Image (cartoon, rainbow, N blue to C red; front, top):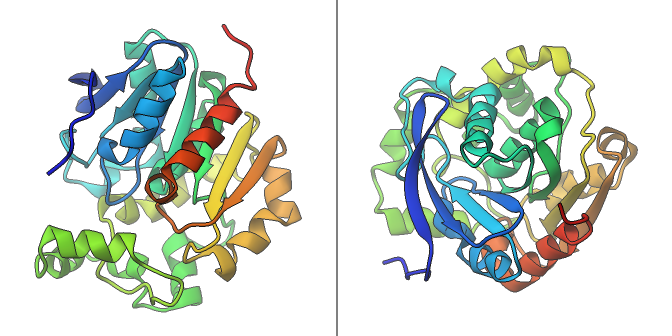
Length: 285
């Protein structure tokens, strides 16, 4: 049972053709908190209280396909353009030209995509666990995963409608969640677990984002990663310390904490303070 967060306002708003549930607290500059899979707004409960207490208006939505937000059935309704459209509608609902955007996992991907496609609407981005990565120019996303990890890699298995759903249905939700949150570097990423329509839209994203091939993230950015994340020593560390990431995200800083993938819950206080230190670099408006 979820514990209650005091003074959080819950509502559903219309954005980009869907109804989106949001949790809101505080007053001040707008900060969007974007969850990952398999989370909802509640995964940000520590940061919601912390940032609201320090003078920010915090909005944590259930992204499309999650929680109390609408869940279109077709994977083609989960492209980067749909997700970014949802977030632009959210900013418009609050009458804000710009916002700070904080995301983890798929929420981090959404934050990067928003910063790429509509940089004029983003004051700054804090991404957790997932760095910005370039689009492969010659191979589709799922094919690249097959080459690197084989057909049993969870991303590949999720492409078949019904397969992952059937695997998930064998277990109660607590077992599935424990698997996600306790995953370690020694685990092999085969299904279950996994997400669905976000993954099934990967190759469509690859096609649609071709015009942005080689584009850079121009907004100020902060990346926070855990040194025990399953991907940290399997390419992430080398990538974020290398020249490609530095060239694609020229105005960035990187913070490495002692933790795993869902670090905003595991290291709640440290992550909250890291986010706040980034936000405070911007002059008040």
